[in-house]
Structures are given as C-alpha cells and as structure tokens.
Image (cartoon, rainbow, N blue to C red):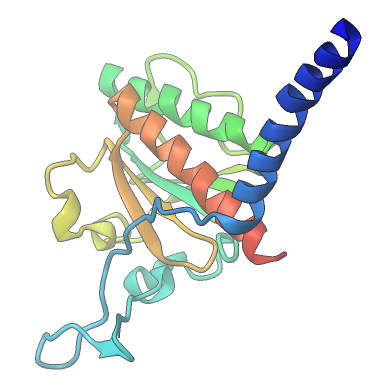
Length: 201
C-alpha cells in the first residue's frame, strides 16, 4: 500500500507540472508586448493608420545611412561612442559587453556602435568590440541624430541604446549607463528572440 501511494505521489508531482508546461507552451500567449517607435505620418503630419493599425517606419527610412551595414534581418542594439571615452563611456561599454555575451544563446543578435571618429580611450577597448558580432562605424554626418525620438529625449546621446528588431523596426530606448536599464534591454532581447522562434513554428 505504501509503495502504491508513493508511486501515485510521484506521478502527480511529475505529470501535473508537465501538463501545465505543455498547456502554457501550446495554448498560452505572451502578453508582454514591446512598443514600436517612429510612426509613419502623412504630408500633414498625421499618423497613418491602416486597417485599424498604426504604420511604423523601418530603420532604413529613419536612418538611410544604416542601409547596407549588415543589420538586416537580425536583432541589433545600436549605441553611440564619443571620440573621447571617459569613465561614463567606459561604464556604457561594460554594459554593451554584457549584451554581446547574449550572442552565445542568440546568434542573430548584433551590436552596432556609431562613433564620430576613431575612439581614444584612457583604458583599452573591449576585446569583442569591432569583431563580427560588434560592428563599429565611424559615423556619416547626422547618423546618431536620426535615432532621436520623443520617447528618449531624457537619455543622453552617449548613454542611449536603441533596440531594432529583425524586421527593422525600433522597439526600445535604454540608458546604457544604468545597469537596471541594461537588464531590461537584455530581457526584451530575449522576448523578441522568443517571438521570432515561435513565429517560425
């Protein structure tokens, strides 16, 4: 009798969580929705709505200088690096290193850093900077300015991190000098990666 009750308890503790997991995996929906930025507007400045949905501009039309730099069809975090990198800048670089580390589990993730000219640092550049997963562009005029939007005016240009999804839409702005903001960015990268993988099923 004891063996039967133990077997029953074991089945309950293993089967019920498995059933819950299966239900959530196949029937539940992710209600954590990231916003879109840069709505499309007509000549009068009115936001364009089609079939009840707001239309948004892709990064190629917002910043034409980013066309052909290899960020198409991949999640990308864009940052700006000043020519002279002080302690504040170094703090942002260390947060970017954390983001680059996500590439081990999310190969489609890339980091793009825009700089006015070749940076000079008091310390040294991160080892991963300038390699395949972390591109550096010496900016064409106005490249970082085109990533301004009403939603991120409080974030300094040299701290601002911009998340672009694999379809080319801007999905978030973050302050790279604040660790909690980087944590939020990393969580939202994982959400977009999950959405991409599930949409292919």
